[in-house]
Image (cartoon, rainbow, N blue to C red; front, side):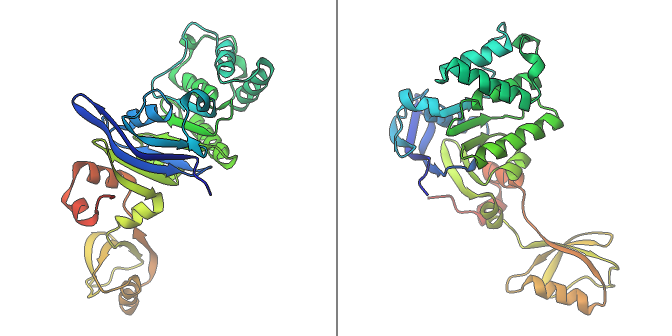
Length: 311
């Protein structure tokens, strides 16, 4: 499968900062891609180069099988920035129509798509409201609609759930899944790691302008696992120590153990079976993306031992 977007050795330097320092990655069509990093890591500069707002100092961007041409390719991209990009005094329906026509839609096509999305996201009654009269969550829904209604091949969503209540957040999340299933490629940027774990299938982490992590969510979590397992027993035996593991934590009949090198999970199970106790639950404990993110950015000793930076 050909990649929709490829970044090749991108660099963007300012007078006192290497905002993007030799970053490369690629996105496949239909994927939901998480772009992560702390404040000042270079994410915004990357997004602005992908949308043609900034030009790289060096490196190349391939889009849809050819060299990226901002003037012609921008109509194939939908960008929802974290900062609101709406006209406060303008009526919502008129604003959606205006922005859709800027993306190349005819007035009739734009009207049809706006009505479709307004109904889908329960915005029918908003047509004559002004943006300044909307709540933060309502503005976020409008901005999402104006980002996707021209059916772009690449959709960039920067903190798309900001200001949304749980019901509307789920509504937008379902639409993101639907857009990906229909072939759109999505770049999802957020500081909410639990949302990344739930939504994204691939992530890149940047820090201080460099890429320090690149992989699928599952592969990343597997890479950082520490052989920890959760065990819940019906009754705790007199001794919970074993040759195959070390006890990390115990709360009542729930244990956390770390399997020693050279042993397997089956050895731990066998130990407790021989203790004549019933095992009610047993599963591996994988690190959260939040823990991995913090460990990499802060450079903890545990992370340094577990991780070798991407070459």
